[in-house]
Length: 249
Length: 249
Image 1 (cartoon, rainbow over the protein chains, first blue to last red):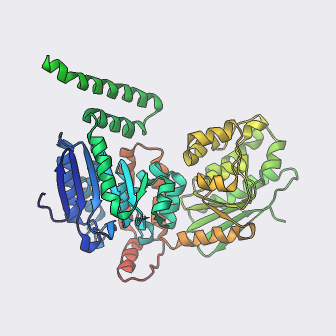
Image 2: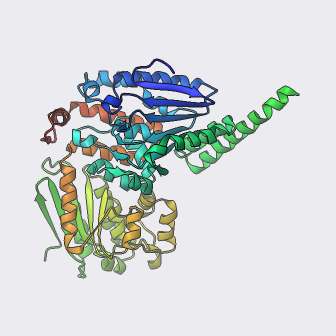
Image 3: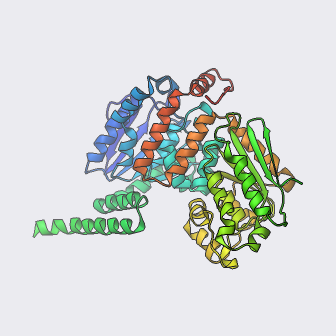
């Protein structure tokens, strides 16, 4: 266990666990949490031992109820704020994370909490989870990928519905919409996330990373380019699989 | 009876197409009058949302009588005109909606249909193909598989199926259709209009950009909104636990 203030980080047996930890404030994302996540995600990306990552929230109330207004919304000049964002770009770290990221979502999943969840490769929810994007009601828009990831995951209509009407979804509706792939009783959420992570960690790590990359990048390409990328990734994977035997012979 | 009526109800511009009408020249007039109804909507600061209401078969008769692209060209420009509206647009569709009626609805952001209505995109049955964005927008809204089935195999969807796959976003009783659409429009108008417009732009842009470029676009829009007074009002109101008073500036 490392000594961060707003995030708990721990790894064992190839699985990293990142826990948003401000339970007294519904795990709201603040500047400190941003900086700690930035550091942690940077280290995870470089850690060859880590094969799967779980992202979750402390306490029983919320995964993350959004950004802490005190820290983000009383902002400096736009151009300065944008510069800070680029310098501490958690969004870019999430986008480029090579390992599969599993979101274990419970309670309130609002605003920035949704945006973090949307960067996960696999999302599972506790039956008490509530999802919402309240930004336009506050005169802002999502700024950490929400408008880009949401339509990719639940489609254009549902995304516009959720963002423009700020309508919330419960866990069952989220399951029907494809926002999460599994709903479990709240008490079983972590076990379910662990079992997915263990399964992934049992696979050839290079194959897992390359598959993730092929899917993530391929979805943004023409089919022709995507097929080319897949072939290149498959070849790299095969070569990596053969390498230990070559070295050992 | 007039071909269409335009009314401002609070922050909403309601455009109702009456019909279907069968006299000569209806189609050209409908296209011209709709185009001029929307001409200034982006500049009109009193209008925050648009509801476009029409019988789903309004264009069917006129469409069947004319086949040449030249004759229909005016009509095909309409979804383009609607697609360029920067404010949220809600389609209220009376009854069964087909062909061009669907293409026009797909250029809107959200769609409300009536109980018992069905939806088709079977231009192939008339020897032509969708020409007003149908082949592009349908797949973006409901996915490639179902879009191909509707266009190639002429599959019609009943109201429940259309709702399940989010071809339409709400179902209303026929006499509640306009109320449902206006209620939704009022809900959206409770949000800051500049934020809603930026949100719309970012979400539609999501499908046209790689994630990398899309995130950049979203970030720029996010920081652009720092310059709006409504952002300050939204955050202040949230902190003071009162409803915000947005002004669109």
